[in-house]
Image (cartoon, rainbow over all chains, first blue to last red; front, side):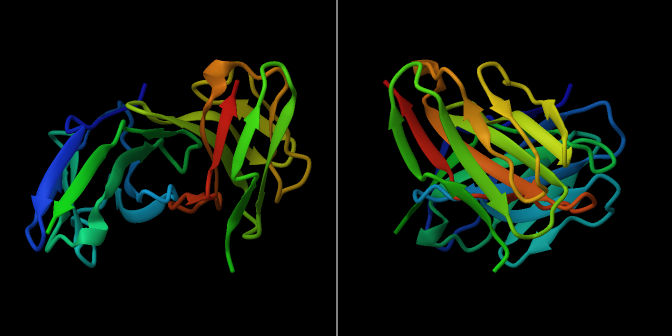
Length: 115
Length: 112
């Protein structure tokens, strides 16, 4: 069975600093996808970044990058130059193999950016 | 505009009173799914559908029903709601070979 672990229930970061949100996953599949979503206080789910299990390069999207370490089964999100608007809940998620139907989410990390 | 539309946004009901939360997408996506979000547990999948008339259970299906009679619609039905179904519910869709899940804006349900 697939499982996502996010060990940081809450984190603080100073504005303009970089922050890393941890995510480890467990799966026996060789093909899978890893995602990060942001949920601001308004409640919507915002897609941030995607990494495929066969992608050799770490994914990047603007200020977001995914530090993918396959052997360690980790997919940490790095946010560079934090902004006040980055304060939100962040979810790591994984989908099953071959565009499978099963998406599993972690419990989330609440990030607070301090001015 | 490509979107997933959920209604209602907020719903307060009483135990045992049947309710339906609607979900519609305009992207011709094959895959649709329902999640509930609870503090400390993240999002858990309730049901999903790979196409019209094809539905399957997720991780927490008890107390819920779904149907997929049209490609664009995937309603969530609670035939006899109970207080432990108080939660934030999300509908999501994606194309069959797509990676990104598109989420609706959520439905906050309170069962008294």
